[in-house]
Length: 231
Image (cartoon, rainbow, N blue to C red; front, side, top):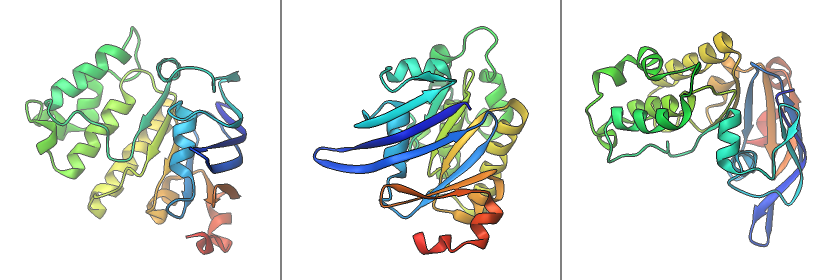
């Protein structure tokens, strides 16, 4: 397994948001991580990434325990987060955003270099000099995805990538996520409120309710179950 969570608990202040969260992801697997707003999905991603310390349990990546490592160490290992709200530098141009992240993440033999992300998202190539904050929502999300994959990502943590996107852009973005994972063996953990779109590309579905895992199985099994009760 590439990523494994074991009995993970985390929260904010005195409040525990997630508890006893356990699942594992194989290389190249796409997991749709679903649940109602406030279920604990984003808290789980932040804990995996090191933005929030765990209160109990373990996070393992490539069979190594990482829950005591810094965020930068986790990035160097191949963990990448596309945060809710995109996480771009709005006052920098498209090219400046990409150049800044590439300087940090693109070493020799990188899986995705600058030219690769421009090929994946041609509209960004056309808007290299455009201030990122003035891009459309869809273009900003493409830029955010580019920043997430620059270098050699091994596991993408994608937090609500479809927010604010038109339906045709959602489909295109998810197709690109699927292409990246299939072609390069990248694993993706996809937090998404657009359930149908997420399940279309998912190999596996995990559903969270009130901070705990209530379903873990195949998309067809999820569709046949009463999982809609958790939304």
